[in-house]
Length: 228
Image (cartoon, rainbow, N blue to C red):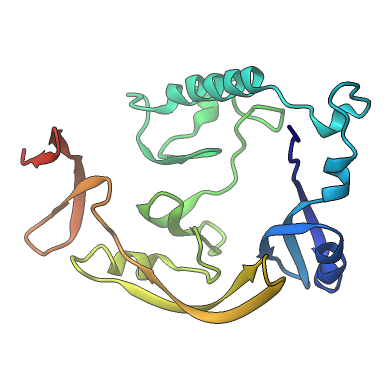
């Protein structure tokens, strides 16, 4: 059995065809300054592996138990910030948290620039969270900081505040790349990206003005959703 290995490589866009000629490009993300991040696999690198006498440990330096232990320890560490009465947690993701207090005065050893420590990156005057990996805010320097998974355009808080109104949504048109490995072809076309709040995971709660104010978990009995 061959172990397929992937490399994440930042390339100049002019080098894309060279990498495509020698291997397989599974994904591509456009970056600034005419560069791209590609998920790349080199078949020759895979075929040259000898699993009976492995000489290049860099090709298969993988340990599922170690990876699982690191993930579990990370979740244990992050649990310190969930439902903590010392501060209010607005949002959390894999590598960040948004709270209303200066954590350096609460967790003395957790804040800093060292490996595994939390680092203060922004203090926001206004910020709106609408979904996992989807938020926009204005920091103390009046710089807009936003994130929306799958969307290339920057957002502002007012745009996200608008979709908190029931049935509201925002549509963007952006270019997307489609690749066909069988035909060795790439196709670029404009796609409509719709940003809206859904009830895919939690029940949405609106106030009398049809503005989203909270969510609650679904209760499921066998295959039916039970109203609370």
